Image (cartoon, rainbow, N blue to C red; front, side, top):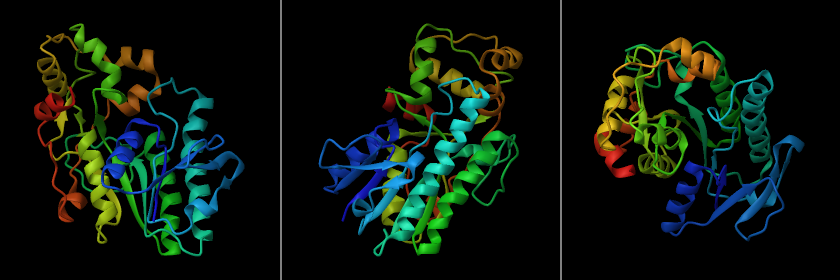
Length: 297
């Protein structure tokens, strides 16, 4: 029985596939080009095409596909792509799962901590409602499409992912060159909380929910040790043995350079508690930021 993975070529997907195969699990990657290997199957969300034969009888599906949030400026066209790549892709996948005579037992579908909007310094668990803004609304619509899998009796988990720490890519990978030059600095006030999770812990959490029947619904994929942006800046500078700038980058400068992404992605506060993961028995490897950065760097 295979585990199906979309977005398998991304940072998280690559690490998850490697971990599953290390356990001896069969993995089938859904790809948007003609399959070239035995472990690939075709899908094209834009054309509403999915290889149903590859999904039939699968053990689980992990859905990670979606356009990158922070790689490009949010023009109106790119915002539409962010929405479409998530909502349409998830809808097409779930529609395919609902057609199967033998659907998978579990769907793990990606989401984001942006679901909650700006929560200030409040600690937020999965019972917190939806926030306001483009990203919270995007996450709400994304999750709603995934939850339709429940109608087919498929246990569904929503991975509300925080900042994933990896030295080889992702958000941390993009800012490392700046910090290595000693030019790292707090963003805005620096008081906004940044929830984070090491890549290894993200993979560990995914393996946990796939194997845990009582794990269902939203799950904060975040370490229990969130920090402010100012503390994140200091800790990363120390991990790299580089100084950081004492003067923060003004919010207006970030907004001028990065537009709406700065206001909704970098300057808002997310202080997440991984209540569902902890209650279902998951144990994190990295709960302190300094230890996590030492491990990933």
